Length: 344
Image (cartoon, rainbow, N blue to C red; front, side, top):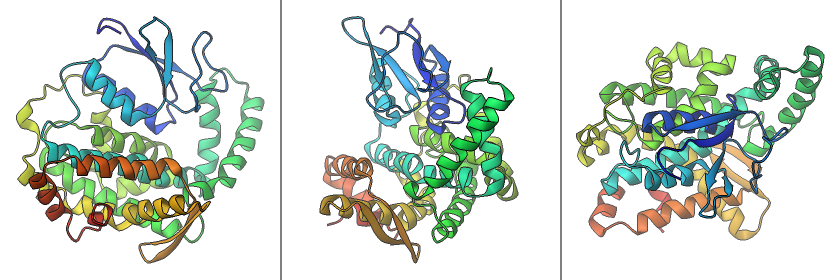
């Protein structure tokens, strides 16, 4: 693919990862074309991915055919190789590591809050069901949309257990979301973004989840505005950063990052690290269920082999770093809970 060709992707407004990648493409000024819809009615002539997730990117292979890709994190890194300039990955290896860790937290933990708030509370379920139908098929009749929304809503409500949402864990998820909004408020107040005065892939991952939590789901959206108008306004700015003129000096220095990121790393260590460790242990033992404790409460959910791979990927990145960089990172992670992910 050349830079003059438009990259195509299939997505929906209610998909946080679609919103993540669209905002990233705009910021990076990568020509693209969004195909609104879903895999229930896929675009004709396009290949199907192995796993039907949104967004689905269609990359041109060397033989001219299209190949489908769905995982936002490796797609982001592929775009870094395919398109020069306006990088969302810091060049400094220590900053790049923090970026990877925070992006993973957003993609894999904040999405639990997104799914929880969308389907756990009745007011949110009634809001989300019809929207999800019309987002995919905006010509659907009212009767068909209502019937489909009811069936889909029941299915999603019955699947809350998949992300660990239940009457026991609801407090853990909702308190973590509220703490995160307060932490993000303080962090972006420093220089505008998570890692300085320019956005990283971690910013776009956070943004994707918060487009749902802060705008679409009534309960979590109200909580966001109650806690931080700054964060709510940040979402609108993040949507299109194509006009931003970034400079390499806009990133935090490692010393600045070690101080600025400490509260966020503490939240990641408080909730996401114990989940990652519990999930990895369950996967290694061949158990279908994760039974662990998060924030002093029981946590139970199905084991996710993919998230065990996420932990392994983070460890591989950490272990590949120079000794002095690893030492600086471990000092920063000390007493946050995140250090448990990287110390045997």
